[in-house]
Length: 330
Image 1 (spheres, one colour):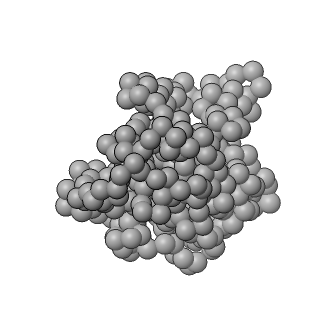
Image 2 (tube, rainbow, N blue to C red):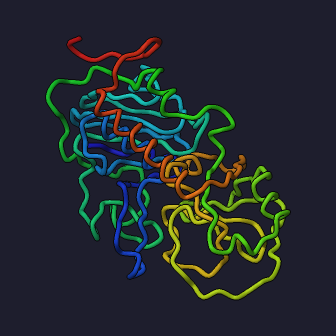
């Protein structure tokens, strides 16, 4: 059993979300940084879609009341098991009475905890993900609170994990460096041509600030006002996580995991799937920039991203020069 001592600013149970239900008004929900959750799951032998806990900004504490395999991924945050510090992107077996504690995030926004077999909560409409807006899924459709108790579906899998990380070489292969991590590639959408060249350049050359009004529904951006060549009324139409809408304020909104299933604002484009983890990890008050790509380029980037994620399991997180890695019985 896992007891939530302190959930931090916002914690919820998430998996990879729901599919095929947008036509009846049910959005996807699920992990904001699906890549981080998938990798954490792979590090302890889980299915990619196993439910874990998504923490926002860290500052949480968990008590384990039984032995269980765990993995931590996502934002850079100082973490401890009891009094021992652990690295980022780390997996090990913990035992009854041990505690996992996290400080406040140093870089990034969301941290993921995967446990053996995934968090055991009911499947609702095809997923265990919490839809906070709709109030269903996860644990009673709500954020986690102090005192909540959760079960792992398969606490242990074979040999105890004494401690293993991604390794420096593999880590550098997966993650962009510096400013590139804040560049969001997008495919222009239906209303992109409603904006003249000057406004299109302005959109792509601006460092947009992530507003403090942002949440799991969408990332609201602050910067110069974008003005169309002519304004028109649109009927509501389908939208997905990654859709970049432009409300009358002229300030873009990037729809995220709990986005509405439809909306009537003009669409500038869609952030490619390979970059959705980037916007999920940009802290409030920091900036992003956009780069237009073709549909073929987006598909190629998505294929590369998928290959990198799958390599974590397929290659067994292999050691490499400079890698920080240790496995039991080796």
